[in-house]
Picture 1 (cartoon, helix red, strand yellow):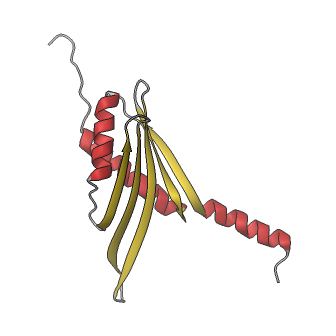
Picture 2 (cartoon, rainbow, N blue to C red; picture 1 turned 90 degrees about the vertical axis):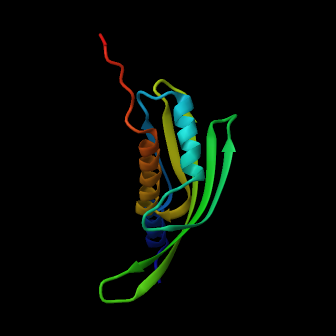
Picture 3 (cartoon, rainbow, N blue to C red; picture 1 turned 90 degrees about the horizontal axis):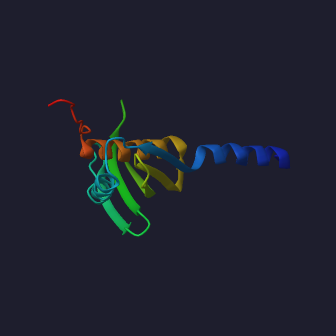
Length: 143
């Protein structure tokens, strides 16, 4: 039987592996309106190469520049030497636009999941956002 201190230590380690994950990114050279429009589009029209979007519920709160996403993904994962394994992943994300100069976006994975999977979900959203915004526009001096 585990002692109380061992149990607390184990729970502490699990809390580091599973839980909310968050990251912010600045979008230099873009207006808040451009970033907001792209943010909503990425939320409503997700693109995945290896996953199928089974369900994608999106709530847009334009008053507070916030988007809530509840998404279910599935895929068949093929391991070397064994058959396909069906994987399902549920994501609950909050995306918030900060109307600073330059604008910033914070993505938080709200449901309990392994931290590495949460980081990958945030990376995927940010990559889609950067891809949709495209290269930033530069203004050359002197024409």
